[in-house]
Image 1 (cartoon, rainbow, N blue to C red):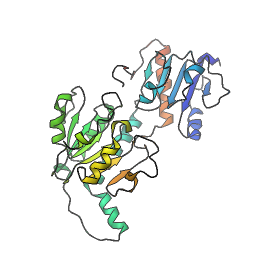
Image 2 (cartoon, one colour):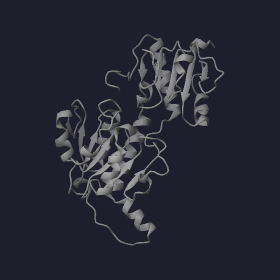
Image 3 (tube, one colour):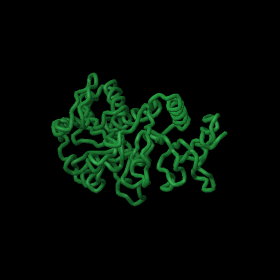
Image 4 (spheres, helix red, strand yellow):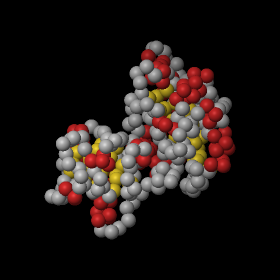
Length: 316
């Protein structure tokens, strides 16, 4: 097999999982692992990446298409020496389903007071806590891409009222939506805020003190809850910790952080009203990723257009 037909794999995933998936994929192509520093990548045309090495493009100067190993692409767009070639996002039902499962789980956890009951369990306290029904709670989702839309649909099935916000207005059946100009109204009606935004210049640090203070106070949950599975760079964690400490926020579920892994000494670990998961809300199924890449390479080599192309001007 010619190296020009090769696919470079530069994924910061569990290597055994990647190797198993490679064994089932790219049967007619050479697979080159960028982690092998002796490997010659100079003639490869394609690369599948997640937080790749900074010298990838010097080692592989003939790349024609980049495939992101996840739905986000900020880890690609921030790379030094990024060539002007197409970048393809990973969009797959497995990724979408995993994310909406996590979002629904977190909304239900705060509705049913799981953090409080875990605290009572730890303290051996037997006391039933009052709680509202899902229909009394409004979940506002910021980010109405594929993941946000699927989460909204499933939250409605669970009985929640759902609002949606995106920079440009989108239409979604059964969901009242807002654009950039409607942010204040959107926030004022929201009891549970779900962040599913890509990381761009416009969204970096958007979840801050000023935004948290505009969420609805005194709603069915008493105090608003913040849930973020988008990008850690979209939240200002000093503001988030302060909002949780002072009661501006009643709780949070966080899967993404400004620094990952979250440092062991970070106060978020020890807050009773915070649920922390290790950027695992929508973990990539590597087998599905490679099927997606094979399908897109097939389209590209047949002269058809690539799907889920990144617009560099918007950052997603």
